[in-house]
Image (cartoon, rainbow, N blue to C red):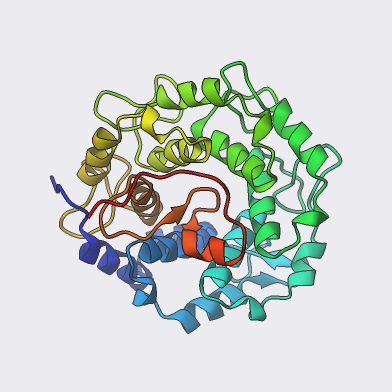
Length: 322
């Protein structure tokens, strides 16, 4: 078990992800391609290796996924536009300083906000608190947050709030750590954290830590590296990072690394993937792991990029260790 972050190995792992086009798994995950590029790029940025992937090739791929009829991005060329992939595309373009390639008014015009305040993921109308976070993240990065009916959106999020302080995917759904982050991050972007029950929610989030140091998403579930981000970032926004055992969480994330091929898995012994690699590295940044770049927990992007756009909020992370 590795006791330190294997940065060179993880950089190589991410670089090699696009070299497996003959594998069936590569084609079966086409619906996640745009998200995967965002995950890989952000992980590389946090590890200080942003230039490990070719910038122009990345931008060209992003633009090849543009759905002109919808005014958004699909996950792969020829796929229908969706808010999840559109958010990842905008995050990539912002990170690569390439927003000049984007028809911003066209994206903004694709308004998926519903009368209730929630956002649909696409033209087919699926709704979920994830899509609220995606919409607000995207529109604020594009300097068009004023196009959102803030009061209605806050009202819908409050409908999804539960007795334990957490939030679900829709009104009436059980609290889930990933949905908690989407709602807390969305409220932070709107400067409406006043509607969160900080103490109760932080208690619920702290209860997600298991004896081995890992975090789960709901009671009675297994630990998973991705919740290291969802739970920890929510605590970071609430300024309650100290409510969990951060040393044990750090050790758990490091124990899930693939010490031969690189990458981080959901838990020790499982196969690594770029999703868990990104969120493991992101959590380690918030935990103050040495040598990493600061991460903004509201946007899940490098903090310096968010600060340069005047979007930083009042959150906390552990001091960067040396």
